[in-house]
Image (cartoon, rainbow, N blue to C red; front, side, top):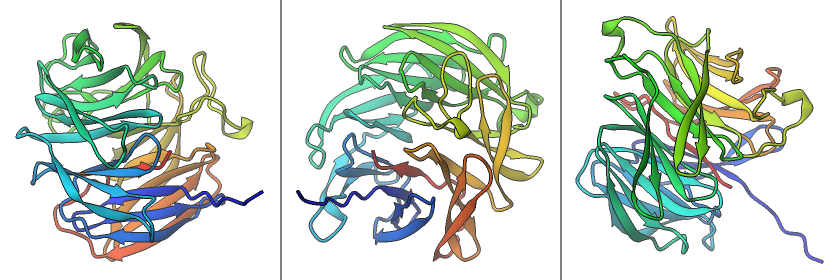
Length: 346
C-alpha cells in the first residue's frame, strides 16, 4: 500500500495575482502559492481539478494554471482568445469537461477534456445582456440569466442554441436578477433577485429566491420566497452534494443543500446561510465588503473573501455559526476593486 496526500485548493483572483490556499479540515486556510497573473477578472477550477482557468477581461484571453505541475502550480505560457465582447464571468463544474466564458451578448464554449489544452467548441449568441451562468451537473445544459428581460435561458451544449426561455419577474422594467445555481441533483435551478445599484432608482424590491424545475429542455416555475434580511443581494453559492451532516442541514421539500448569499444590507456586508423557504442566518459580517462565497465539500464550512488596508483576507466560518477564521494574504488594497472571484477545487 501507499499513502497518497490529497490537497484541495481554494483560489482567489486579485488584479495582480492569483492566490492558492490549502483548505484544512478545521476550516483554516493556508496560503500555498502566489502566481503572477496580471489583470485576472475571474477564475474557476476545471472538471477534475488539474487546471485552473483565469479570465483576463482586458486582454480578451483565457490563461491556464497547471495545478498539478511538477514543483507546484504553474502558469502555462499559452493563452486562449475570448472574443471581442464584454466579459461577464466564467462557468465551470466538477465532472463536466467544459469551460464557458460568458460575455454580455454570447457564450463561448471550450472543450476541456484535456484540462491543460483547451479547444474552442462554439459561440452561442444571446438575445439579451447576460448577468450570470451555471453549468448543469450532467453537462448537457448551461443556464443564463438576462438583464433587461429578467429571464432565465436554457442553452443546449449539444445543439449550441437557446432551447428554453422563462421570464421570472413579470411586469418589472428594471434589472433585478442577480445570480443562479443548479440544485445538486440538477432537477431545479435556484435564482436570486433583488436590489442593485441600477434598480434602486426605480424603488426597492425584496430579495427573493426563485425555484425553477428543469425537465430536459423545458423550464417551469415552482415558486419563490422572500429572504428578509438580504436587501442588496450579490453572489449565490450552493453545496455540490446533496448529503449533509445533520447539524448543518437546511431542510426543504426539495433538498438539504446548503445555500449561501452575500448581501449588502444597511451599509454592512454579510454572508447569509438560507433555505428555500427564505429563512436566513448570518454567518459572516464584514465592514470592508464580502465578495463571492463557497461551501466546503464536507459542508461544514463557508468560505469568503474581503479587502482590508493590508490587502486580501480569506475568511472561513462554520455553517453552525460558531467558528470563524481569517487568513491575511496582504499585498495592499487595489483602488476601485471590490469583487474577489473565488473557486474551490473539485
